[in-house]
Length: 555
Image (cartoon, rainbow, N blue to C red):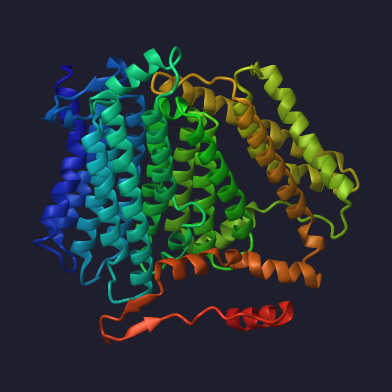
């Protein structure tokens, strides 16, 4: 097939979704028959279009459309293995979420408007992953923020929706500004907006020259843009408060739009690989956010709030993996998390039963810390032994080994349960088998993802000394957290533990202080035209009075 025809087939998907957005202006009300029919047809045609693009794209390799613009800045799409993987994921998620939305909002007085806004958001995300020029990359990045804002204020009369939209709007504009600065620096450094020319220049000159200052600054601002887009600490509060929008919005947000941050870093992998400071920033903030969010997640009584913290943690982990330079593992985690989170939100009514069915066997109330430590060590040893047998090169693949170790640490609870049950051989064998299966799955899927996108990301190399030290600290922190988590059932009745648990459940009040900083809790009710302001944070004179006040608020 002609390489000029393949981009047209690929662009059919976002074009059809954009057509739904335009048509919804004429049928914004309840049960819009034409919009519903067009939505169903578009999602099917989108899958067919993406399927054909993948078939021909993987055969042809890199395909770039004709350029439209001025002075090398403008419109061109890039069809490669990375964009095709992301495009296929978005098309499948769009098919599921649109179909769910048609039933979910049946009878809503503004169902047509909602479907139009949803379609506009999907089209924006598809254009983002297809961008082959700095101009289109920035335009689609901004469009994703604007379309999401229109979804967040779909029920604009609700104060909660206003608060979330206000915080997200401020952070989105800061992220847009960071990305714009980064792209301007890249254009000034290389004199072109074509991504392939920029990457080729970096690949040809990076090994023999010092990293240019403009390139270093561009990578840093790219990292900042990704951090702001992916709700990293301490800007994560808006994400856990998205409760006033319809469930399909939460599903699309957590499964799709949040991924724009890690995707940006993966797409700009050669820029990030040429930088020294930006990967350290990603590792520091991403690693801390992943640890923070995973701890707070375990204390949340609300399903949607817990899923919100889960998304924050997963995005942090993805950025941590990007900082370590293991881009195939980051893409693998991104895709897996998207499908998991879409399913979790769309089935949130039964998620409690699902969580109960997946919980690990409860440990006896008295488990010695030595056995817990031995269970963690046993999990790490099994993983390390398999990695050596797999043929992991410790010289160049140390980062990959560290990322897998973080994942396998979660299985140490299985070993601890088996060891705590009077050295039950059957349980120990089951735990070993489970750890083995997860380890095989991780290395197999990572190898497959690497095979798919190996030409779009830098080869994995030995991390420098600063990355090794920082990675070791993060790995140790995860290990200590797992240790405390396993020990937690024995401590939950102790007063000191309960006092700490209250602060953890409230996320150490980082969101409250951020609200004050941006004045997000000051909104105007549309119906009453009165200002609604949250009560001020009051100082307490003792720890006990603070705990009592918080308990009364929670009750």
